[in-house]
Length: 348
Image (cartoon, rainbow, N blue to C red; front, side):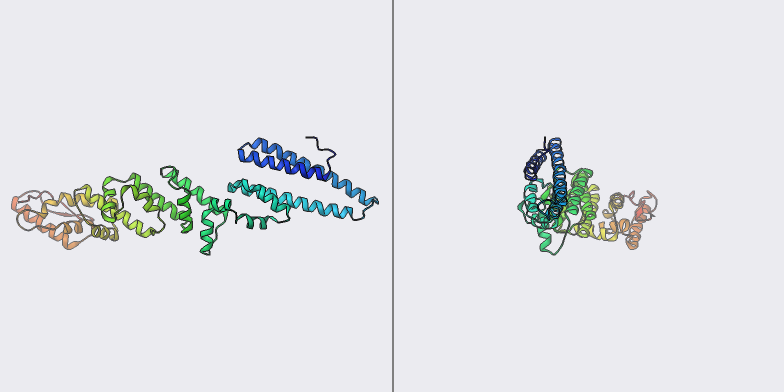
């Protein structure tokens, strides 16, 4: 583009045309064409500098307007201010995904507003509110979050979605908005995503059934349940582990209610301890029936999973009685948590 000899008025018109074209190409994803127009804009700026230098020279050499040089300098300062404001805001809008607002931003800057004032006005636009829907809700609660922190939360959510194998789009805009509005932190989000992934996609059918039986949460609703910010993390952890404990019992055909599962969780029993403990309970199941003295299922659970010494003594007594009666299977041996050696006694 031949711009040598352009007046400042022509430069202004050409600059606006090139800027509009650059914005349009950016919106279409044609970065090369946008870059070419940015180069034209730079050439126009350089030509304006030459024009202003010539005007200043005329002023200092006794031209007709003694204030021409000062006016040219002031005009140049204002022009550079506008260019700097527009370019800095362009970078932000590209990062925010709001490059469509550049026309409005350029208009505001040309009217004399600085970058900070323009951002205040941009935050009131429908486009901004649609892009950052949690901002307004947080403001009503007296909370503040920067656009950079908002975008970082979105990126973190997308990374967690991929890392934990959740279906694409599970952490969509609506879900992220709800989490941000309820001030869910990045670390809490990871805890929730982990439970959602394991609970909904990687856990056993027995555990899923216990969620349904204990808490009325169907398999299809597990992910949403864990991501619901209205549910506190400590409660989710309690219910999650309790369902795992109930699932470990069910895997051994042992039915325990929610109160027993939650008691075991509060005692500190985890999934692996439950799996091993209920395997021992199942082996000793014969001691709960038959002739003579018996033990209850609760005693078997208490001895094997809750260090209940009285229950362990009752199991030893019943096991010893049956072993003596039938001369089978030896005694009962105490283990670190629970008892062993009682499951070979006869049931009659």
